[in-house]
Image 1 (cartoon, rainbow, N blue to C red):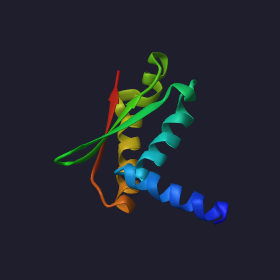
Image 2 (image 1 turned 30 degrees about the horizontal axis):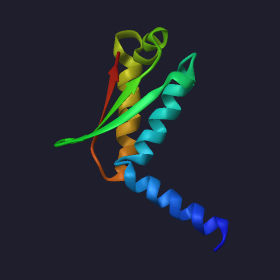
Image 3 (image 1 turned 180 degrees about the vertical axis):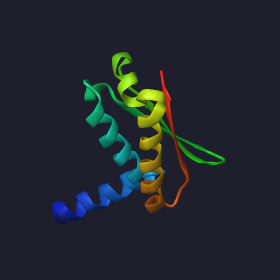
Image 4 (image 1 turned 135 degrees about the vertical axis):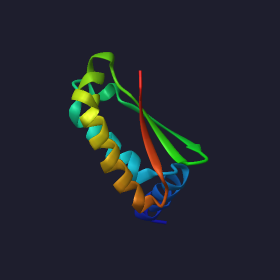
Length: 98
């Protein structure tokens, strides 16, 4: 069996475990691009009645950058992630957790 086949199977299994893999990838890309310490970014997905809730944790000093003035950046991130979640076929919400 070739390595490509094994890697393809592993990728499929990883995608099945995450309820919204595309939305999570987009969220990680956006948040890691904004913060000073991308290694501290943590994203947890929680399945609920209304869909998937993606909880974002960043370093304390980076939370202001992610939220933005009057929450504009946070709302923009939520909008883009919801659009990406359409590909996953699930409703998503993004929560920024201290």
